[in-house]
Image (cartoon, rainbow, N blue to C red; front, side, top):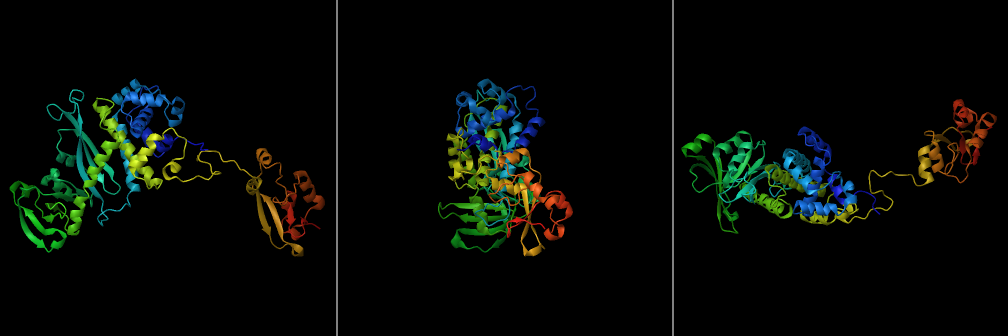
Length: 489
């Protein structure tokens, strides 16, 4: 039977809690808090994300049904609706924001070797946003339209592993292109965007930073062809050109050349025009990069369907941002578990398993991989491992050393204690003395008898046994495996 931690506690073990404690101290999250700490808030909200809870009342009822297991989940405070509501209202959302970013850095290191659909060694990002609709009367701080409120989730998704590298939460009125102002460009990385981010002044900032972008051109783009490269029209390519902008304002903010690629999709029969500042990668690779941009749309769909960000547990801006960042942290934590445990299941399957097993006392690796555990292997790393047999114990207490140069051609072994055993160790091995000659033999001599044999009356000469005089004075015995007796004159 598994005697370790609950499944939910095992999931939370993959998070860097030293970072969480540092962030709580940085933003004074537990200042004047007596019972319900920031850690309790995070664990309750993460439990709600994993188990599909819909409200604070739902969280309270579910956790209240297992009061004896809350301590083992890591929850020390009293879980009530008022405590959860006050924590979501008053605890700084930046604690959960920076904690999720720490998890993102861990996940990106784990997924750094993931393959891409395009043969590129560079980092490839997909930038897009999604809108979460809200009620204007309950969320007046997030205006979107006259009768509706909304928040926007601007996401920069690393296509190696589908890990969000950057998330910015704003109200629904903020245009997508303004996110490029707060984005820190990474030299050598590819940024794949749709036409909503086509602003040549901001794209020139990416160009000067050493980054590459791939986007679609608008229908009113004004440019002049400088050079055309040959293309294979059987693949759907129409042209591969180097162009310069001709519009006055566009030419002023982006004076360098651009690469324009025209491609006809064989499936939808649509003609697409791509713009990029990279002139080295193959033409079809540019088309494939933009096709992989769809991964960010799948990420938004997955998060909205399987995490609780459509219904919020609070109406304040702090509560909404806290819930979104905790949902992102849970998503990244599941991705870390999938990679570290080498689980072949999808993230959706892992989340479904964890949602119905949070209070079970089952090893997480066995739950996700159906791997049987060895019955003699302790399940918990913190479990005290007691030595089970005498031979294992004596191997620690004794050190058997071969002695060369013994007289009469005998094979001599010297039994020397590696360290002096304690009374408890002597009792655990059944009273076997550490002065015993051959510890694997069935004979059991006590320490007093051994000392009488090897001391001065029948002491062994150093020349005959290969030892020294000091060894005999310390009472270390010598055993001859051929004659089955102690060697001496």
